[in-house]
Image (cartoon, rainbow, N blue to C red; front, top):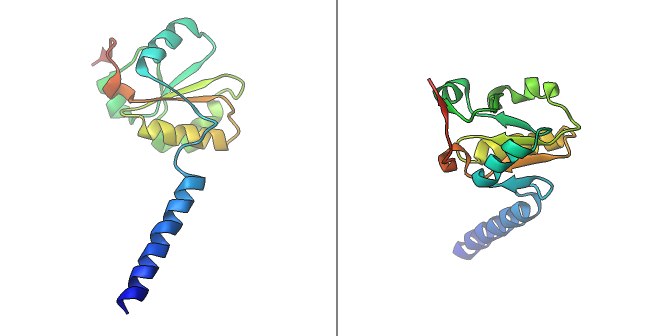
Length: 130
């Protein structure tokens, strides 16, 4: 009986591993940049659209100048206001929500989407605060 249980658990673990290997949370089509690269991009790339997907209260407390706030919780209903023919650079607190947003936009047909690794926690530049 123990062997059957162990075999079932092992099969489950291997199955989950295979699923994550093929359908993991990140998408190879989505670029990533550091916050240092973001600083440069915001100064030099006047065609990119910079989106902060943190919630409104987080954004209002402190945000990077030049970022537009579209909270992840509202992205599904507001993403159509974003141009599909420009790069969309996504920013959040740590890089997790921005990657979720980037994957969502990619699935909606946005071909040039970039996630900022580390988010505002890694940002060492100036912030707009209340």
